[in-house]
Length: 94
Image (tube, rainbow, N blue to C red; front, top):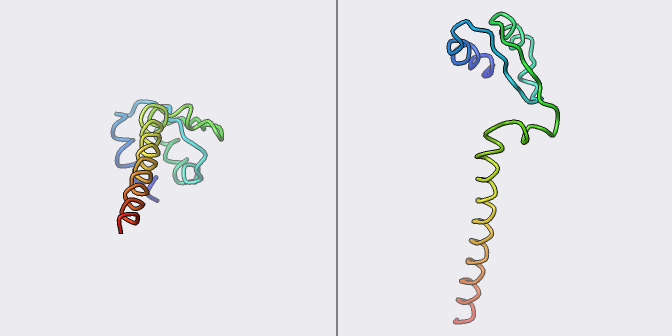
């Protein structure tokens, strides 16, 4: 129900009654009858991104989310190393 609400309240008004192409992943919520009927009623054509290709085709995954996740992994590793070092040092000093 949330997807349908976003489509009706956010997407449709932003299109100013112009036809649109919307790329979607394989999430089942995108393909419910209510959602598909809403797309048809507002001349929105959907294109389904094949499985395994979302990260290659969605701009945020490629340009922002991917690098951000990589940075978080590096920071997490650094934190774990620092924590281990400090914890080990404290044990040695005690």
